[in-house]
Amino acid sequence: MGNKKGNAPPRYDEKFKEGAVRLVTEQGRPSREVASELGICVDTLRSWLKAAGAPSPGQADRQNREAESFPRYYPISS
Image 1 (tube, rainbow, N blue to C red):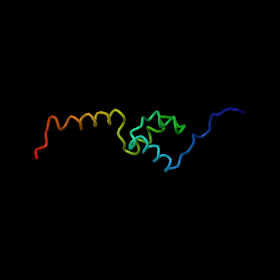
Image 2 (tube, rainbow, N blue to C red):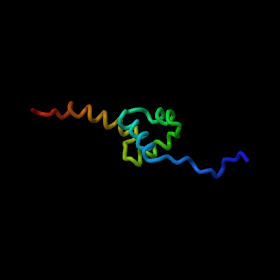
Image 3 (cartoon, rainbow, N blue to C red):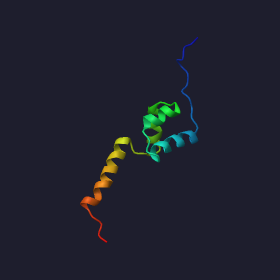
Image 4 (cartoon, rainbow, N blue to C red):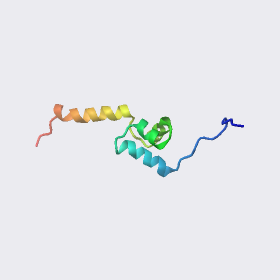
């Protein structure tokens, strides 16, 4: 009777998904932290981030480092 096999995973509405994605993309919070706070699986959140076109944490770090180093190598002339 207590068998959970065959139960469908929970469904989340679009507003919930968008809010979770914004916590990561706009506030810069770690995916694991946001997932834990919202009571969802981190892999679920990562799939929402991917679907939203958000860079993965590794990509975001690389992009930030590249953006910071860009002016050192290519100064903008006034």
